[in-house]
Length: 376
Image (cartoon, rainbow, N blue to C red; front, side):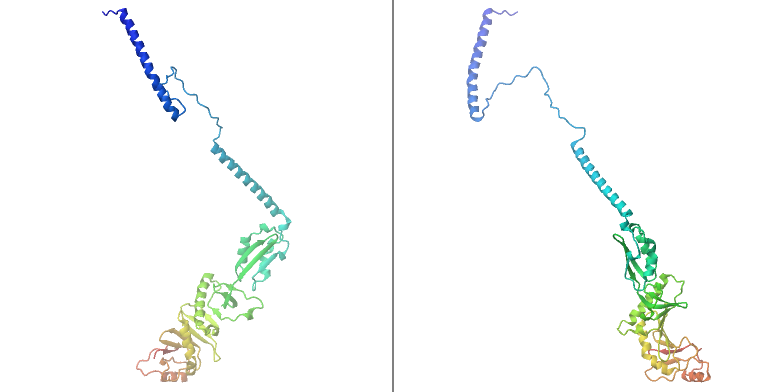
């Protein structure tokens, strides 16, 4: 057991007191020194002693922010949407007012046929157009079915295309594009005009003398336009080829038979009698030149030249469509040589034809027409 003397306690207290005085004396100059240093750099004094913590820990009080029920960004979008809706409503109201005025006002009513303006007609009569548009007289211009009227106008044979438009306040404008006739066509006993697409047009009254075309045959009334269009492409090729060198041989034609597109036949007028020329399906210009070159020779060799078949490259058949022909005279040098002559019905023609044939022990069976070799 330790025994503490009263003197020892007093000595300890004195010792602690002296230590505190020394510590306080030593601390004062340090504070003064730090204060002098801080005075130059900063106006605030520097306290080196640690802060004493509060014995009670309290949270910092938060400042509440007042917010609306709708976010600001969403409110901005709603405002824009409301403005757009209001603008659309104003526009719709304006359109409704204008529509009511346009559909009920007397200013937009077609009062008479004088309010129908027609342009581009030459072979189509004004009466034909008014027969289509007559139901619209007295009607509001906005109630005229333009697309239906366009289709009805294009059913007129001479009309290739039509444009129908509204001319405010109370007029209808019609622009017609007419078809171009390229030939006459014989269908049965009827003569009409035809365009390059195979559409048949009736002859306009009082204007038949304005046209100078060959007559196309070989078309039936029941043929569709698509079939006639194919035939007309062959006709167009024939005309373009005959006129390709500037001679305009197509003007010499009186008829063109398109019943067989593999054998296009043309009728060529001549003072001694029209001649039917078979041109085949191609090479029309060269074959027609062959006919023009030898036509007079053939007329001298035959009493009557009715037809010539030029479809074969090295062979010409004279009068292939007739069984009664006159035998040719003996050809001279440089002219096409006679290969075979067909016997005619008369005795004189038979003798001449026999003399013209080369001698053979087995004569060939006669054929219609006289054949020539074009290259000998």
